[in-house]
Image (cartoon, rainbow over all chains, first blue to last red; front, side, top):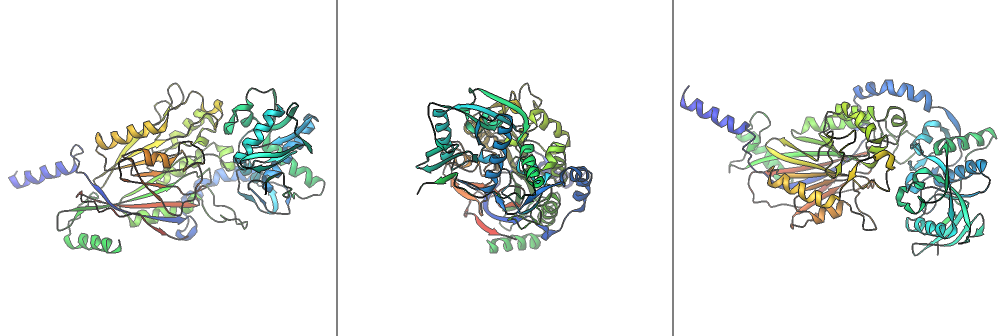
Amino acid sequence: MSRICKYYLYCLFVLLGTSCHHARYIQQHTASLYTVDTTAGKEQQYVQMLQPYRKTMDSIMNVPIGIADTILYKAQPEGTLGDFMADALLQAAQLQDSHVEAAILNYGGIRLPYIASGVITVGKIYELMPFDNQLTVIEIPGDTLIRFCDYMALAKGWPVSGISFAIKDKKAINILVNGRAIDAGKVYKIATNDYLANGGDYCSFLTQLKRSTTSLLIRDVCIDYVKDLAKQGKHLHPYIDKRVYNAE
Amino acid sequence: MLNRRSFIKHTALGSGLLLAGGFPFDSLAGERITKLTILHTNDVHSRLDPFPMDGGKYQGQGGVAARAALVSKIRAEEENVLLLDAGDIFQGTPYFNLYKGEPEIRAMSMMGYDACTMGNHDFDAGVEGFAKQLPHANFPVLVANYEFTGTELEHKTQPYTVVKKAGIKIGIMGLGIELQGLVSPSSFGNTKYNDPLPVAKQVSEMLVKDKKCDMVICLSHLGYKYDGNKICDMDIAKETEYINLIIGGHTHTFLDAPVSVINKAGRETIVNQVGWAGVRLGRLDYIFSSKKDANLTSAQSVIINK
């Protein structure tokens, strides 16, 4: 082998070798952003890969359960999606225990930005509430419930039903439960989900309280609420009724 | 920037020094110029299909088939592409309720993701549920501040990976959010969470000093920023010295342009996040040189196809 040939082999070895790394330095960077739509087309192999999953899924999820005659949306301090979920939760809880006075859910638990008006399917409620959270009733002393309302005010408003308050300086004021001013000395039965009852969303103040967890899923509660309306020939039509509002 | 790019292209064609195997080209001055394209997603939340055409804000957007087509188009145009995800792959459509993440991970493997980190919702089927889908993943799961000792995920994730693209050494690490208070304890089980800041400092420094990485990317599911003092991407950017780019998630923040932060060492750290549901794909193009005389310009942001 000639010397030149050996030299080139040596160079190649050095270039390919990982032990020898020539440092590189960032000189410039630019950023760009794409909206993912069908401008670049669709890759059919993904459509095919999903097909068997979709077939089973559609048979379960594309089942209509009722009709919304308005767009439902996620918003703070109050939105119609949150109102719907909290109303459904309170109704289901009161069927189990008539002493339940109100329902509270976490804003982060609303997993869709909106539900369009028109036919609502099972799948849409799965998207709204994908978690297998269960209806839980907690017995909350009035003073702790005031603290809970302050926490919701700090978080800019959560979905509630049977409770109303105004948000002022990141605190809850004018708190009403079941239409009456909150009593710090009374114990209230409040419906929520097991996620919050177990201290989720930093609600550690709930974990030590007396509770009863049902096997009812929040998702099924929402599905049944829409189905019940449909049976009565009614549409889903929540509206903003100033349950939670920013004080002037 | 455009002038610089055309200069680079011109040199490449003119000198004919472009070597096989993705080696960079040399300019006449002996300077090696290489371009790295980083594509990223976060909080895709099981959105395998596009949003339905129901008049909503994101109607027709997202979906793996369209994302794959876009990624393929970019791969055809660019030689050195990294595709990364910042967590919360799971949960949000009935696909997850029925199939527990299998089609999500399969689609990411098909698309050629280089790495991802774990989000809080990736625990929604339990530690064992995530572990169960890993045989479908052909990319590493990076998370440096969770310890999975004694769980189903033990030895199945790694704190970082080092990728070499066209002679550039890229260290990629992952950071996960505090699980207590956010994820049901029955889901995260014996997973131990460590403070992300000291971990980020230690791992990023090691990637630069010991592993000789030219660039450090942090995939983070900590969240962009908060009203309170909860640790976030902006804190990690400001308080560390060796991270060049943070690809974030969790807060579903739609940044129209990445945010440039001066870090603890007085250098630039970029923070980016592209909302959620896979309706956007983020892109950053980095130009590397073999010469240190970095005349680093600030990020230029171009909104494409918006």
